[in-house]
Length: 328
Length: 243
Image (cartoon, chains in turn blue, brown):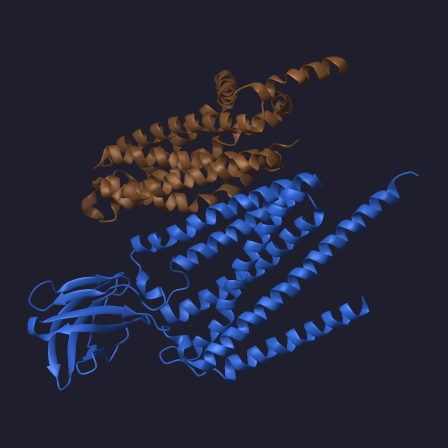
């Protein structure tokens, strides 16, 4: 018992040092990312909290299932503790994400697939707590909230499947939010179809010419919220076949890139790129990021065990009080 | 007394009755008691009618020439009207059993799966009535152009199936809680989010007059959602329905 306690103490101290190291590394070790500046550092906090949220949700569903199967109070405490700590991490992930989105994309909220799923997750947690507080009988509270938790877990795959479709249909530049900017872009022609749309941005190809060994596209850009129109000149390196200059959209930090050209026919493939693509290809960023994932997972396990223990203790205390009140 | 009990349980008519026949009996009992009070029927129909009238009064007929996004706006409004009317009525099936203190008798009279299926059927009948009424009122009062009526009907039917599949178990859960009405909406909404997205998009495609190739995807998702939730409900209902 004493050795186990000492081990737990050591682990807790190590975790504290580890997290402190991550915070230091976040500001001193990671290089500022081109196009994001210091805002890019937030991924060290944001992504691990989001990932721990999903772990917490899965753990909570697991304990709920085990409670319904074995009807042990400890399993219910586990489900509640995982949900509570998961809710905390979910809120942190949402807040850090919204801050990042506002700096980088110019808006706090944009209904991109991950934002949608994390918001619904927050609502499910909140509903779970609301249900627990509305049931007076202890056994019934455990049973019904476990059933709800599992039922909610069944709908999550649909949400994950459906959310990308949701973004497809909104007028937001959704492909820019998906890492690596996997959307296909639009082919525009100087002689044929000149106007196209990327997300909610309307592009008009005004001209395309060769300047030395780069091709320059003259693109007129309109965004719905923006009254003024901007003329951007993205370039394309003909020798390497890669986009060169990627100008920024006015008011937003999306980049416009020419991904392929066909000079003979006056055609260019234009695409939107989100800053943040390729953020992890830097090895220092990558290792700090992995360390942060590990650290946050450790933090979650510690908080979760602590909360579960407190819940079990509360239960025992309450039961002993009830026993004492009974006449002998 | 005990001898008679054992005699009864040895025959055990509850276990012997075929599941679907028992479910049908629960459904008929619910329909009959609903037709006596008409509580859910009145509440749901009047709620749906007032929502549509309020929308129509507030906005007047919307014309496509003024707004290119009109179909998705109309589909969204229609589904919100359906959703909130459903929140007012669909919990009734189980809440009424608890309030009238019938639940214990029902537990003795039928096995849990039969109770669940009967209530599911009753809720479906109520919701289909509500959806039909709301949609007709909505189309008439807001002068909605329906491009592909058959597809709209199919999406509305599939969406209703999914809505009922998600809310019946939750109705059984909240029937035991202390703040029933508000809790029903709070617990149901997060689970209904994927259904709403798909149903609104499918309905918008139908209003726009798109072909069936735009309807097959949403219908498949709605069918998968319904099947998954009904199966999950059947697994979980036993533990929810315990006294």
